[in-house]
Length: 288
Image (cartoon, rainbow, N blue to C red; front, top):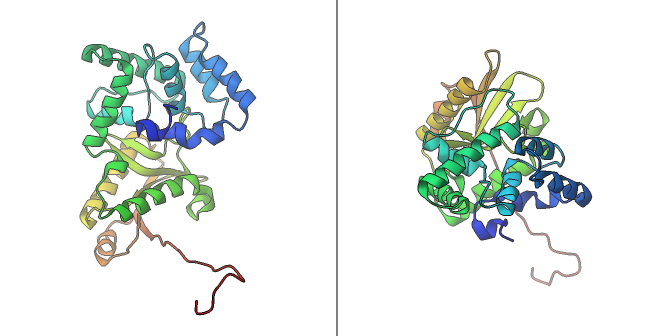
């Protein structure tokens, strides 16, 4: 299937949400029938489809439209949004704008860009992904200290997203969602960069920027999360909402601890990996 991550390396939503959105196949078929009905306005189809199936967000819906009508519809996902933002041509939307209206505007932009570049929308999608990856904006492209550390950090990022409710953070915080984008808070587009995880408190007017410390220096990590906090304060938070940060690191080194003593709205947490082997009864040989 062309939608699998292993084939195009950047449509992660289709690959990851497949089992979830296919739980009720009859409902999924009805939703696809609405989505692909070209006799109806696109805005109406998208607004109906996005509320029909849990987990069926913009990255999946627009990819399905693109595969069904490659000459007419482009893909709107985190990658294309970050790329177009870096080019300073991504549109801004008023609060309350429906998902369908947003995509209609985004799709018109993608169509014009493809026409100007004299390429098709499929090639444009791959080009935008490559532009983001080559500039280091994608977390999957960041250079880590070793392949083992890369796998560990990436797994931690996805583990937090997929198991958020079962973590300590999930008791009071929820990963940020938007209409048409249940995973909006995962790799949240922040200008031309991405916040690892963006969460909102379940009861209080508070935002939390979560940053995984990878290969950056202490100064880079603190500076980066402060930039993200400032961006959320300016673009998302209201006057009565507080924005705070959380740095998650494998090592709670002294330099980072000292830096955070002067930043009252940023906390730090250390993660641990527990790996052990348990021998099965009756199968352990003498001397083991």
